[in-house]
Each structure stands twice: as structure tokens, then as C-alpha cells.
Image 1 (cartoon, rainbow, N blue to C red):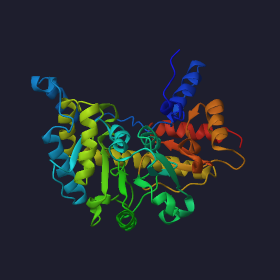
Image 2 (cartoon, one colour; image 1 turned 60 degrees about the vertical axis):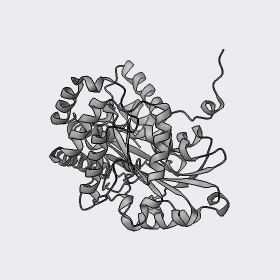
Image 3 (cartoon, rainbow, N blue to C red; image 1 turned 60 degrees about the horizontal axis):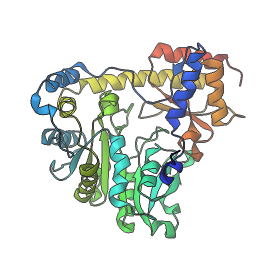
Image 4 (spheres, helix red, strand yellow; image 1 turned 30 degrees about the vertical axis):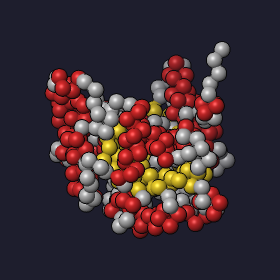
Length: 387
């Protein structure tokens, strides 16, 4: 009876909605499903953060409309956190905006700067919202393949001149979802130089900077000289503090880019619940021991999965960050066929690499979001299959 808009008709099926459907069907058949699909940490939000929210909920001043830009106290806490973690100095009034989760900010950002016909440079495989936000803004996506031979970094010099002349935004995401690849300051420095040369906005999704292991500590692009001239960076409390359901994040960087995103938010949302922002202040300003404990737990899980998959002859590189493992499917299988086999024959949900973009074909992603015993059970089930 009612026709969807053309923009909705252009949307690809959202990957994790389809995974949820297949998982529900398996559970309905009585399958003991081990879900390693969606990147939603199973660990509880630290108690001191929860208690801050409990007290904040009781305050009558938090029961009214919040500001779209966020409480100044939260923006100050975010700026102090960036200074401590990365040595980046920010003005909380002009260079920080509060988000209702980073997904919200990422989806809304193109509306501030992309006109119909403009090009947005999007890595692939990648988080689907970079393309979806582009689509909603009327822009055109030009995909930059992330390939193993390039360490899953985009080849900026391969972009055709006619595409660059129409390009407005370059999306990046390091540490990377889904490949778990990392980028160093030398790479970010080249990106900043490239963006300044071609008049590009760099939008960096930095949701996984605190989930790192071994000898690598992920940088912020804003550590590069001149980055504030061209870049905005999105940080999320979801993964760092196991707060995915709380929906709290922030964006930082160039004043004009922050202002543009803020103008969109002023017109489409009323800001994050202030009690949640107070919980965010407790997270960003409090003892960071909980973050280190989370890192250790995910490192132990990573080691279990990496060692187990290698014993089963899977090809993969141990990730230096994120709580994902990106591995090649066995020879003779497509990503979809392999993931379907795991679900149908072993009750294991993993994500097919091509679900994040065509260059992900031949890979699958495991999310380390169940405990070590459950991961060992999943590996045992995989070991029982015939490939």
C-alpha cells in the first residue's frame, strides 16, 4: 500500500539483521548456538560507572531535554581523556560534540557536508554505516579495497583524478573492523598530506583504540601536525568500557567539522540522556584499571582462538587490536558457504567477510565476545567438521 522512498530501496540488507534472523531460526530448532557474530562485548559495565548513572538518574535536572551538543562537563571529560591518552589538546566548546553512540554521529556526519553527486571515499570491507550515511546524504560511494597485500590499508594513489575532484570525505577506521588491521602515525601523516592536497575531509572512526595488545598502542590521527585542519575523529565508550547499550560517544577535531555535525544534531535529535553522560564522565575520568582488565581478558581470548585456528590449519595473522579475528575460509569455500556450514552443522555464528564488502570474500570474522571455555567449545566443534 505504501511505497518506500528511493533511498530505502537502495539500502543493502543490513548484515547483522540477517545474522540475527539466521541465529533465531537455529535456536528455534533447538541448536545450542555459540554466537561469535556481532561485536557486542559480554562483559558487564564497570560498577563505578553503573553507580554514577544510578545517582544521576535521581537528579531532577537530568529529567529534562538535554543539549544536542552535550553537557559541558562531559565534553570537558572527553577533552581531558584525549589529552591524557594521545597528548591532543582540544577546546571542549568548539572541538568536541557528544554523540548518542558513534553510529549516530557517523550516520549523520555526511548530511553536514555532502551534496547530491559528491563522492565519499569508503574503505571496503568496512562498517556498513559509512556507505549508508553517504546514501542518505545523496552522495556517491567510491570504494577503496582493503587488501591483505597492503596490510588492509587503502591505496590512496589508486583513486582516479575524476573521482578525487568530486570527493568530499575520506572514511578511515583503525584499528579496523572487520580486518583488525592497525595503522601507525606514518600512515596517518600521509593521509593528512593527501587530504590537504586534495581538499578532503578525513573522518576517522576510532572506536577500537583502547582494545590493543602486545607492543602496539593505536594512535589518534589528531596527533599528526595539521590534522586538525582536515580531520574529525569519532570515539565510542561502547567497546572501551563495555557500554554498547548505553549509547554514548563523542567526536573531536576540526572546529568547522564539529560545528557542521552539531547543526545536524540540533535539528534531528535532543542529545544524550544526561544521566548517561554523567556515567560517561565517570568512565572517562575515573580509574582506568577496568580498561586494562578488559584488554587482558580479550587478549587471552584472542590467544585461544588464534592458536586453535592455526592448529586447525586456518590462515590468519594474530590481531594487534580490536576483539575480532579475521581469518581465511578453507580452500574450496566461499565466505557465505563456510559461515552457513558452521551455523548449520556446528551451531556457530561467525560473520562472512563479504558481508562487509566484496574484498572481504574469502575471509570470515570471529568476535571474541564469549568466554574462553565457550571459545574452546566452538573450536572443538569446528575441528569436528570436514573441510
